[in-house]
Image (tube, rainbow, N blue to C red; front, side, top):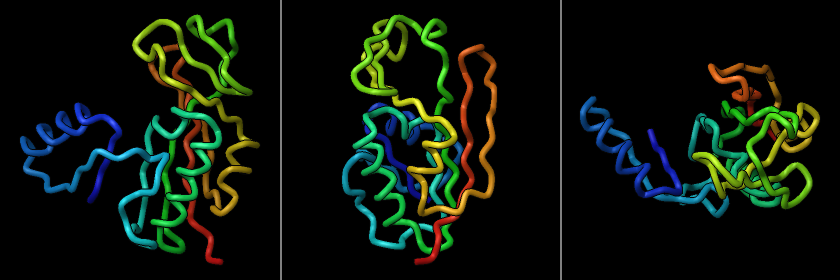
Length: 155
């Protein structure tokens, strides 16, 4: 297994937890919005939890193209992204482009967020056969996520 995060602190925490459990996983500090350091068709599956939406749509499209590149044909993806919530339910924020905002308070202050809906998911993941697309509600009122289970189409 392989894992990466843009945060070196996140990788250090993961390494500590994995060592305690005696798991052998290759971890690296990498941005998903740039070319990934893996060969074409390298992975059987890709899991991306609560991360893909933390940029503008152009960067997100780059990440999706990289997932397509490193995933073998018929490879599986499981991705979660937040469901759009009404503006009055969000902390104070600054909108930077359509469907994209930056919270001005809270533990994600300054972190870019892009908000998907079902139509946008289908559009942006058009090279995937979506087997299941469902909503999961977290313990907090604002934690509402789309879950995407798909398979890379053979071209």
